[in-house]
Length: 208
Image (cartoon, rainbow, N blue to C red):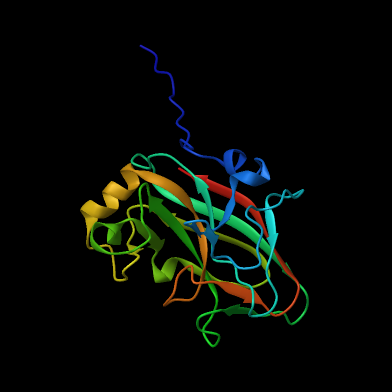
């Protein structure tokens, strides 16, 4: 009796080609709530670049970039999210959280359940989720990669660790958007600006 080797390869639910290299309008910069875009001084979508979608950081405290997201579907069978990006900036440029200028500016991965009213209250306290503190990246020039398992702790909009597992599972089952946010440890997605010219390029984004 002979046996044939079975070769298994990872299943990519949403790949880099499905995200980073698609048209610029697929990645929205916001959030836009009731007609108002809270990323002040930013375009509504990322621009198309040779290496991938990109945006220029606003310079000065009168502008800020907060959420960068893309529509998705249910993430019930997904196991992890990975982002690879590059930041190019002029010498000496710093990245400043709008809400807390003295804190380090960070990038967090993010997902949102369909039907959120952005209040963060009642049932909506389990509609927005952010990667845990140890799964964030300080903003700095260079190439960076961050992978977050969907079985790890995630932070709900109200703060704290993933204690409402039922709410988190429901958010995965009914996911509407996925992406990343910029802010500081006490205010994920509360906005960042740069002190000099700087560009963010999304090189790869995968959900497996």
